[in-house]
Every structure is written in structure tokens, then in C-alpha cells.
Length: 248
Image (tube, rainbow, N blue to C red; front, side, top):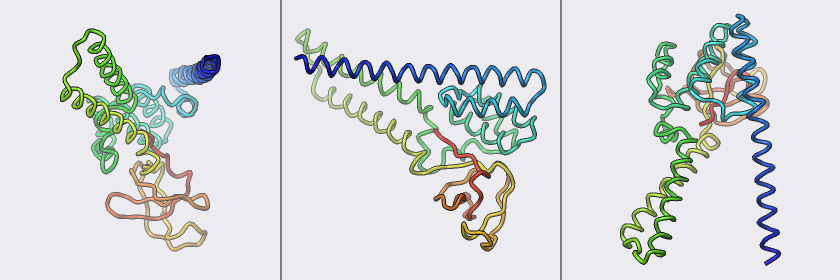
């Protein structure tokens, strides 16, 4: 019994430490976001764009649609169209179907639907955080219903329990898919017009160019270069710093 209690205590302490670190990161991220908006207000758009990027790096959970739209505007006014395109596409991931973000992406000449092509289709259903919370809520309701049925002597009918269990399982599978899709099928936004090469080594044969703001699939990384492929089939190696990887 003492061993179990000690194990539970250790888990609680680890959870508290993790929440503390997450809170510190969120606090730093909010401070950077505030600094970004202050820099924007003074007309220092380059500093604002940099502060927004740093805030996102420190606390990715702060990247709401409003945050991303503010960052996109700062990047555009700072003369960084590729970075602005990245933030606009990130805003669509943060709020799928939101008219404001879709309109902003369309005004920049991009299609919101291409973000959710291929394996990323589940990202167009709900933002990753909302999907996780939905699965957690459904899981809690499922087990509480079963427990209440046993407690009051009115068990949930077997077919209903099986159907509810299947629905909860599918939700958790969706959560897992949404979490893994960015790792298994990474996508990136081209930050500036860049030539593509047939190999990652210097002096490789040129294969064409990728335009600012293009959404590309990332096939691998070697020698500081990314192998990318556009939806129309164009492929080649570009410098790693020439693209920003999207995360759901």
C-alpha cells in the first residue's frame, strides 16, 4: 500500500512540475506576444514579426487564429510575404472553416482547402486542441455513464455501450492521427522564391523554382536541405531556411 501511495505521489509531483514548466513557457510566450503588438503599434513591423515568431516558438499553444492573423499582418508589413503566408496557413489550421481566416488567405492569393489535402484531411474537422478536448469529454461521459448504471442498478444496454465505446475509440484514433500527421507527412511553406536542385550537394543540376508562399510536402532532409514536392509534381532540394514547417 505504501508503494502505491508513493507511486501516486511521484506521479502527482511530476505532473505539477510539468504544469509549472508549461505555465512558465506560456507566460513568456504571452510577454513576447505583448511585445510584438507593442512593436506593431509603434510601426516597428520587423521587430513585431520577430517577436511573434519567438512567442510561437516558446509557447506553440498560443497560436490562435487571432494570434496568427496578427503575426501575418506584421510579417506582410515587414516585407516578409513568405512568412505572412506561413502565418495565414497556420491560422486556417487553428480555426478550420473560420470565414475571417479563409478570407485572409484568399486575399493573399492562396486556397484554404489545400492545407487539408491528403493525410491532413482530419485537420479540417477540428483544431487539434479542440479534437483532444472532445475526445477527453466523450471518454469521461462514457465511463461515468457505465459507472452510474452499475451504481443505480440500471446498466447501459450492451448495444448502446458498444456503440458509445466505438465512437470514443474513433475519437481517440482521430486525436492520434492529428498528432502524428505533422511528423509522418510534414508540410512546409516556402518563405521566398528559391531554386530547386536535383540533389542536396552543391553544384547539383537545377530543376526549377518554387514561389513565395507555396505549400509543399517535405520528403526528407540532408546536408541542410529539404526535399520538397509541390502538388503539381514539381520536386527538388531547397535550403532548409527557405521553408517553414507547418504543425497542426
